[in-house]
Length: 138
Image (cartoon, rainbow, N blue to C red):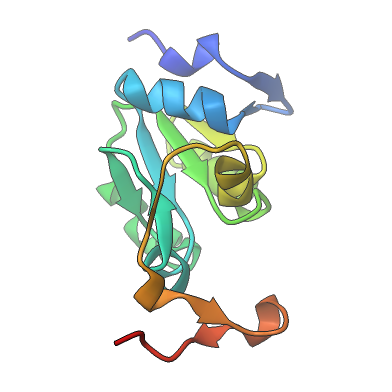
């Protein structure tokens, strides 16, 4: 089977890294976006793409077998820190078409790529350690 990801990004220390724009191209060619962010984040903002798999990072080791091993997987989190670790884990479990998205969802949004937003799920707080749900808009 041809690995779609071989045409994209860079390979360093066995991990393929792709940009958000490359990620969107892979998704448009049949790849699957795996979002590792937690529900508090994905309920508010999510890539507006047709095929996305929500799997919080904390559940990856228990639920990775739900991911299709025969598709190119783009793994992303908020900033790109946990996704590299997740790619390494998936590779150890036999996934060979897996890449980490550089910069995570922050870069996806910064690049002006499609985003679906539910303002009723917006979080508030002075820093990431203090985020909590806002009062709902009526």
